[in-house]
Length: 281
Ligand SMILES: Nc1nc2c(ncn2[C@@H]2O[C@H](COP(=O)(O)OP(=O)(O)OP(=O)(O)O)[C@@H](O)[C@H]2O)c(=O)[nH]1
Ligand SMILES: [Mg+2]
Image (cartoon, rainbow, N blue to C red; front, top):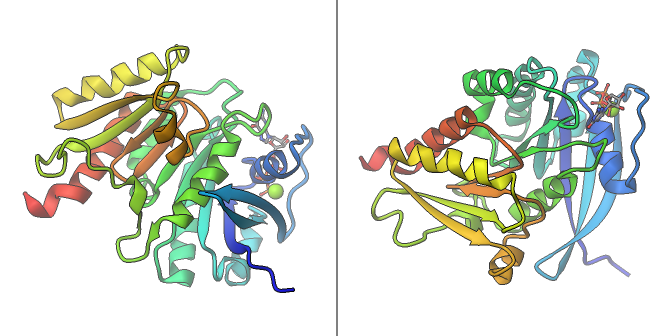
């Protein structure tokens, strides 16, 4: 019997030691190992996920981060449907490698696919400032469609990475290179040239409050149309967007999961504002 399951290929890329294998192991087997064994070449994992009542098979390609494996990039990047770029929050310099991987991917694919930046190891001490400085200077920033702060060790926000990718794949618009569903137009926001932002939270999410304050403070600089969605009350909207962890913030067509800082939000808002409105101004 022929399988009718829709299968998609996701490539996981980034510097050595950032936790690519660990993130996949956490997602696929719910396991974590403290020891490090470099991935030689690449390994493929499979997991099925249900999106909008449809089963999607995710074929997850774990690519060894060592320099030598870049030479064979064509072998594993070809026909990728989505990419996860992994960086280590304790080593901001690992953001630089994402630009290199991204260029390789674009060169081989020659088309737009959903891309997510994953900041791993948030269970460790790290300096948000160093991350945001590096990210705002990096060319990789404007290229991604989602950003998740996660930990393979604790499992925090790991499921969001793959459900976000699966959702994007099912609503991907080849022409515009954006997930259609995320082009939200609340209260005529586009007509007013204000940037739509949807902030998913609930009453018990105390750590969501400073993040919301941070975004609110940016409305002095940018015309923002911020819609707050309490997921306990708006259950339908939360399930339509597949919200798993809080806060989840949709800014234009970019999604951010987890804590972030003002500088990162400012740079995402600037990117999205210009992408959506620049040619119309
Ligand atoms: N504290 C902490 N350590 C982590 C986390 N994720 C991975 N590690 C550790 O980081 C090291 C590298 O993890 P790997 O998953 O093997 O890294 P990789 O990116 O696959 O490395 P390459 O295969 O060489 O490209 C291991 O010692 C892991 O235990 C995390 O979220 N928190
Ligand atoms: Mg590995």
